[in-house]
Length: 58
Image (cartoon, rainbow, N blue to C red; front, side, top):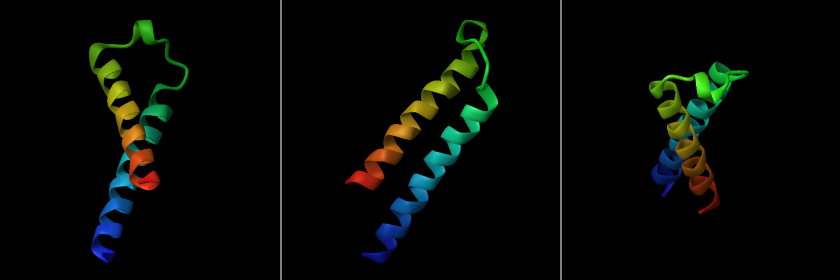
C-alpha cells in the first residue's frame, strides 16, 4: 500500500535525522564527561538507527 510505504519512509527519515543530530552534537565529546541526559539521547539515537535499518531492510 502506498500510504504504508510513505509512512515507513518518513519513519526512517525521522530516525536518521535523530541519529545525525546526535552525531553532530556529540562529536568529540568524551562519554565519561557526558550528563545522564546526553547518554540517554545517545542510546536513543542508537535505537533509532537500528529501527531505521529495520524499516528499510524489511
